[in-house]
Structures are given as structure tokens and as C-alpha cells.
Length: 214
Image (tube, rainbow, N blue to C red; front, side):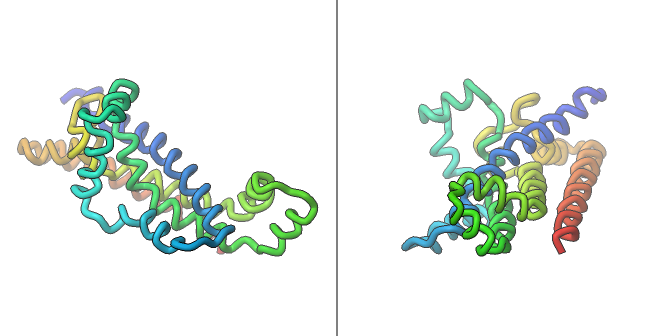
């Protein structure tokens, strides 16, 4: 295997994780902000639904996504034409970690400060942008890093729904799986080392955010 083909799963994994992690982070931060500001009937059930991908087997998540985004659905057909990459699948599994971390950060913001800002006419968007987000910046940074890391390691749902198409859906986890299946253990070890090194760096970054917060 030449250098270009060896690096392709690494490149695709990083690109997919960056976009999927960003998507998951934005949605998770918005949901976390709302959940810390309002109370409504059934809130516990909604939050449990948010966290469900953490405990479900990848095959269950993959099957649900297959129904929603499979080639037989109009959503799936449009998605494949436009993107053809496992962004949605990675974002789904990255969302819970990003949500939990972002919510912890927003929950730690002093409500007296947000109430004071609201009393002088600040809108909800202004509260989030100028008060809550800066005060929870370290937690939000950790949320993005953890979401990125989880998206990077997503395997089951992607393989089940999108397969392993070189240059499109052959991310590092699926490349490692195929290398082992075909008996190419040396290649599998190389890719394992690559994703382990990236994951190690990401966890160090997340710890750094938490350490600064403490």
C-alpha cells in the first residue's frame, strides 16, 4: 500500500470528525443551553433520548439510521448525492458526550449574572453569546474535543449504513476492521497506532480544558 492510499482513511476520518464534531457540538450546545434555562413536562425523557446513543449497541443506532437515511428513503437518496460521507452517523454518536459536557458548563454559570443581564434588556441570544458562553468556554472547549474524538472513532453505524467505500466512507475504524478481516495485521496495527495517537492527543486536550476550569 502506497503512502497516499495509507493516509486516505486518516484524512477522511479527520475531515469527517471535524465536520461531524462541529455539527454535534453546535446542536449539543444549543440543546444544553435550552435545557439549563427552561423546565417542562417530560424533560427527563427528552434528555434520556439525547443520551440514548451512548448505551445502545452500534447495530441498533445503525439500523435506525439505515431506516432514516438508507438509499430507499428520499432523505437518504438526497444525502448520498450531496455528501456520500458518514457525517450524520458520526454526529449522532458524538452528540451525547458533547451535550453532557456542555450542559455541565452552562449549569455552573451563576444565574445571578444571567438574571442581571436579562434585567437590563439582554435577549436570550445575547445572554448566550456575551455571558454564558464566555463563562462556560472551557467546558464548551472540552465538549467539542470529546465530540470530535467520539466522531473519529465511530464504527458500527457507519459500516452498517454507509459501508466502506475508499475515499468516501472508509474511515480509520472501518479500514482497521477490513485490514484484520483480510489478514493484513501489519496495516491494522499501523492504523491502530494512528488513531490511538490522535485519541490520546484529544483526551489530553480535553483534560487541559477541565484543568483550567478547576
